[in-house]
Each structure stands twice: as C-alpha cells, then as structure tokens.
Amino acid sequence: MRLFSKKKAPKEDFLLKEINKTKMALEAAYSQFEYVVDPDLIDSCIYELNAIQNRYKYLLKQAKASEKNYIESKS
Image 1 (tube, rainbow, N blue to C red):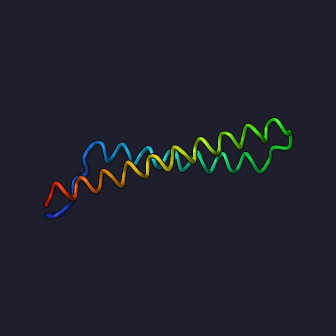
Image 2: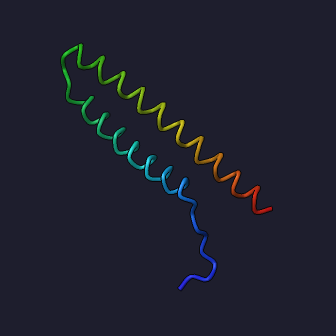
C-alpha cells in the first residue's frame, strides 16, 4: 500500500504511452533502414525516420511542459 504515491493525470498517461509507441516506431524504422537497398526505399526510410524523430521531440517537450505545470500547480 502506497500512502504517498503520485497519481498521474490522464494526459500524462497518454503522453507516456505515446512516447513509448513512438520510441518503438523509431526502433522499427532504424531496423528497416538497415535492410533496404533500393535508393527510393532509402529515401522513404529517411523521411520516415525524420518524421518519427520530430514526433518524439514534440512529445518529450509536451511531457516536460506537463511536468513543469504539475510542479507549479503544487507550489
């Protein structure tokens, strides 16, 4: 039994799930990139990697902002 457990807001849970899904998608994209040999597929993988990396950065910023807002609301 935890007396002082920090309960996460639904938005935080959603962000953590999305971050984990995006991390897995990034790993899959890197794995796929290692095996393609066709120049068109290489370009496609690079675009996909860039898109996933940008999404990952965005989600991390959102999580940090959410954590900061949570801390400020507690003060």
